[in-house]
Image 1 (tube, helix red, strand yellow):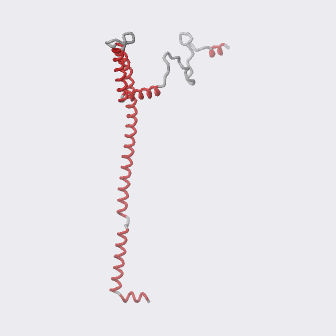
Image 2 (tube, rainbow, N blue to C red; image 1 turned 135 degrees about the vertical axis):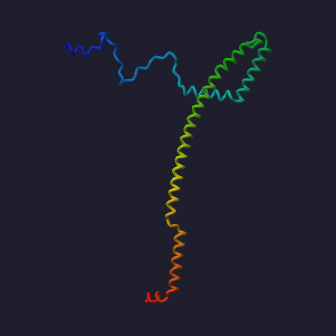
Image 3 (tube, one colour; image 1 turned 120 degrees about the horizontal axis):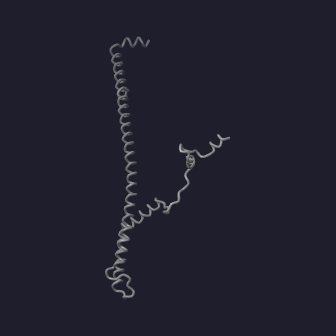
Length: 186
């Protein structure tokens, strides 16, 4: 019974100190708690591409220009109590800096995603070109083999010329040896 107790207890090292139980390798680990919220990188990438596309349009530039002009005019012309950003326009500067600080990384993210797509497309094109070259080389070898084989095959023109030569040869024999051909007919 003492032997059974030793096998059921947790294994201990050479020092006799009990080791913590080992994780099972045939089962997945339990998910860890994360401090940061999880997000779908693909959805975020698509969102950043949409923003980057919009930031690169004339429509964005026109709207941004109109907003800035209205902002400046409002804070110059409006009564003092309604102005929310006085002359040095600190709040406008802050808003534009905040927009730039978000726009630049989003544009870079969109460019990186486009570079990845271009890299995959380039790799697929390269593989397709390699296959096309291999196919072309194979067909070239096959055509060369057919040409070599056709050199030994009787063509229609060659057969026609041989038959014409045989007919001429037979006509010459008939003219030269008419008796033999008459005796052969009897």
